Length: 158
Image (cartoon, rainbow, N blue to C red; front, side):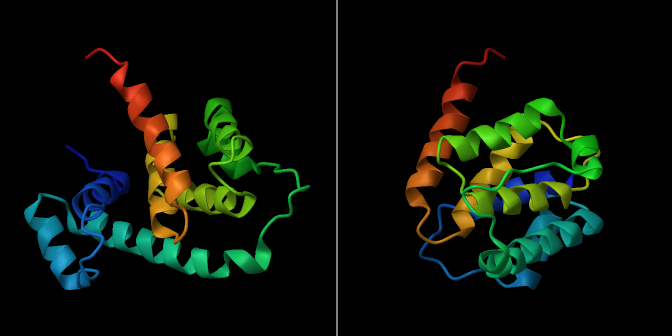
């Protein structure tokens, strides 16, 4: 079974999100743990690079943050990877106040950094949770997003 970068990220997120008081684990320890969990070296490297990109982009986001009056136009590459329901969902999250314009851009950037050819709304939900979790002071937005994710999932019949 081919694991994706998002699978690795979700594993890390679910494993470490409860450990807020713990120091950030060493990269070598993460590699060993992910390897023993069955993830391939290539996916582990790409997932760790994705997390590095999240930290780098978060540091730079304030210098190029869109204004409240800006309008988001998706480019061809984004349109090819995010269908209309995905683009609409990201914009919806901004409209209801879960994402700021700068966070929207960070989410789109991190979605484009995934190795998936096509991205769906479920994947967007997890990336949004990871982005919000990584930013201090976003506890309320994170809680609202978590409610959206798990409310919708609770109604599904398997």
